[in-house]
Image (cartoon, rainbow, N blue to C red; front, side, top):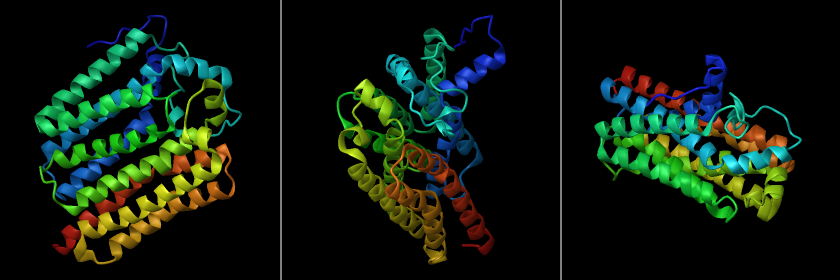
Length: 316
């Protein structure tokens, strides 16, 4: 499906708008999550299936992030009247913040972009497994429900944990149908805890000024910094423990080496900025945690790849 673009705009401007619409940097980083799932399920995945999984995930994440902006377009237009004072780097804003709400992209073009990407993701997911296609459809539905609950309940953050776990599981079920391995459940717990503590609550924390004006109900708005901090840090600690357990279950022959490396990575990416936020609960520290945590699955993928290579060299 072709995306119709206004002729007065340059290709570069429209490409940047579509990239921002899909939060391209965050979407691309998110592909590390299902790729982790593929390696946890099969340390030597078939190249063809791996390539299909990568294509389905890229299309799926670009579509889901864009769908969030399409559904929230009216709310985002209101949001621009109450921009927070904090102007530091936000990894979500690469390519421009909410280009549809700013009028840099038409609703028709945005809808066509999402439909095309969604069709590719579902078609390729179905080639991999019916479970993969079902996970993609479920993730899209959860995203729509999450957006619809913006002004209803702060507990919508629980949906994001499930949504992100579903995305990671796509990589797992692209390689195997097994559901009885402890590493799968540790992987899901790790992803859900990381998403809630490392991205969702702290991203809302950085947007408190805007959300109060808009009537958006989030944990920081409704419960304040003390409860938000405790919940955030609790989830970060849970992700740290689950990540170490995940590595121990994936490579028991490596002893404490894998879990220890994972604990060090989690300490840097999650625990250290989480403690800083607890001590000084300002938006800039919330966004600093968000930015660092956003890179955490990709760094974990690198760590996992090093474990796979080591295992191969040692003949394990």
